[in-house]
Length: 187
Image (cartoon, rainbow, N blue to C red; front, side, top):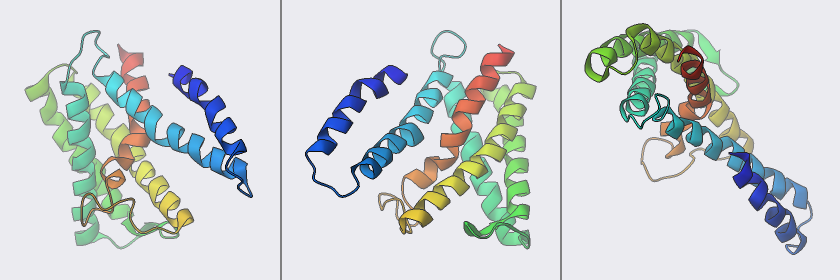
């Protein structure tokens, strides 16, 4: 996993020698942070498919279903019942009520995954849902912090009205490594 990062990193430093920028290490830092922040969690997400030994698409698929159920539940509960701000400085529209609603919907959805996908036991799917609910929300907040610090509203315009493609996967970036570690420990 880190071999890829170390293979390319000398070139990142060497290229910076020729760019005549005022703060070249800022550019290097942004480049390496982008690789660490976006690429490595996706490697963990892909590894979820191999956690049982042979490739099994149901675990990564279940992960995405739970992740997006969490987002949907948080949105619906936050719009309907949201009063108490979760982290107003970073994301003024997120509420504690939305957070709880997202986690609850993720758990409800996870209860059905064992029936349709098997692979994991019901309690394991529920634990995965709690991890995704908590750390998926934190991933969303980290991505909001990133956008705020860079002064951008959306992370892209591939998906109009969604704040960019990264908004569909920001929860994955924090949750996938932790779900992988959890499943590795219980296997």
